[in-house]
Image (tube, rainbow, N blue to C red):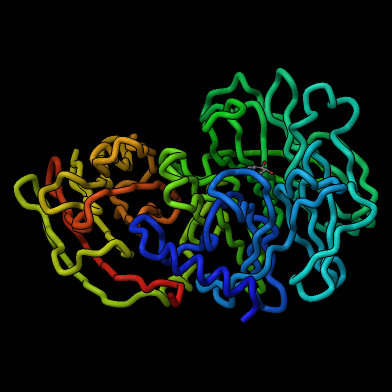
Length: 489
Ligand code: DQQ
């Protein structure tokens, strides 16, 4: 075992006992992680790079960490891929970017800082080590006509090949107007021509959500002639108002025409998504799940940041998106409980008492009655002092995560969050929940994804209960699985 692999294993073992540390989600051996980067399938293996500070659980000295997987679920730590290097354009950080296959040459395009520029690196050993291109930076900054406001907001290259040209999207802003995605073109990946803004937001727009003042981490997905632009919205600079949006439309003659838009994820913790296209024609997305606790708690814990589950993205009618957990995750299923045809009411709840467990997959299908409100209590202590509730309200069609009792620790986030999930009349409400210690991810009817963080303090906060707050609800089926750890530690 190499020195770096041995060190990674030792760090993972050291942190394995932390009750908040996830066991089937990818995260670095220790310290700080944020955006997924450079996602690519190479010779059948899935490569995940990520924004990484190997030295402390804080966003500084950003490297590109690297891991590889045969199945989207089990990961092997590889050596750090990019390191900020004095005398280079990335001396102060190797910020986000992408990976492409340039005629068999693995190539990264990423943000060097500061100032923010585009750097290129290539690999000659199947992505293990990377060579910084001597011609860097390949783009020295935003176009002249934008430099007034955009300097310092020019990052996160996304590159793809189309009709014999390479195209690049860059995250930026238009001063006084809003977020902006810039479009570039190249024939050789080293000389880039600025074309025009691909899309500009209007910071005075608040419907369906505020468009923010700066747009980061663009991805353009292709589903036939349907194109989906993903962006991450920087609400107000340097605050934590961050959320991912998608625009569904067409890309023709180097113009993107958005037709519909929406929130890509809910809950306030999923950010900076990136998508990989695999050899089965799937679009597989990961996002950074931020932490929801104080910096002092993060310093004490020694780690911060978790990668979401792999999510299969596909188009739905009306410009919406299908969002489902990758089916490979079912290989983690161990003990299974199944219940059918239960009836919930205010007087009758259901306590699943066989497994007090922090690592569960739950698939619940409900047939709600008129004007009812029901849900699940997760990570529930026997006396209910700590509990996280996932609640569905039939009249408003709202799914809410209620966290005010999720922890007795005042230093962690405990706000509630709600999202409306239009359900066709009579449609079964399907809640597909993944609980992994401090991570909760919920897929609602395969088209709404909510991610949150919870940090219960009590070791006995591991109960699961179904309840009705109002009205009668039939539980068509309830499947519960204990999930295995992906780390052999
Ligand atoms: N994180 C990176 C930037 C990107 C931001 C720096 C999004 O490249 O814009 O770590 O979370």
